[in-house]
Image (cartoon, rainbow, N blue to C red; front, top):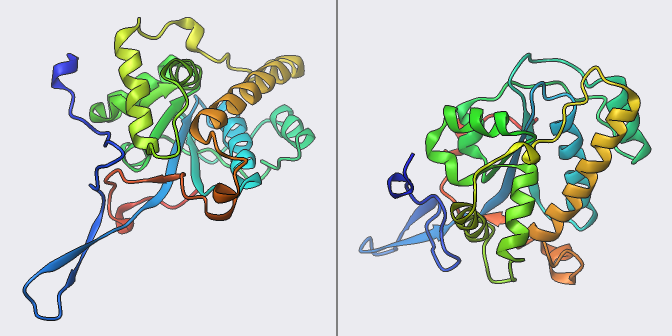
Length: 247
């Protein structure tokens, strides 16, 4: 798909294009738009939604919660629904103080992609599947490894740059470099040894730390802890009635 055919899904920091509620002027002559900012949403994808994506989701939720940053994190897979995480994944998350026992797998849908501001696959096949379901989302779909790599190349965002604009910057770095390769995959530990799960969990932990540093470089600041302000999105999304329930 040629880059010239891609619509622009990202907005510059100064752009005020978001969901608008029109409020009538008392005289009925004019309308004042009210900007509605929504929490930034990240969708994490793996094959079964019981190992890699769930571990990444729980780790990133913990980072955001520690600093009161309001981010909506959801995960999905490509196969069955309603499956619980394997015992090795549960045990490794418990060692980190995280509880994923209540999680049940969900299958990826185009609506989930529409609702997400950033889509991160555990491996190339997950990113490809997301783009196949929703080609227009290509500029905000990456693998986790790829996004961290491109984000570090693009440089940390400052306090005035929206998350949407910074993701666009990371995508523009991608357009200047080679595409995805096997090094952008996180190995699937499913039905492997506990040692394999531990290695994969440690890798995801490191990637999530780097991702948090990129997305929220001012996590330690009083302003972010108090308001969670930088973790908002101005990207147009489906109306609330059309959005799927939180996981």
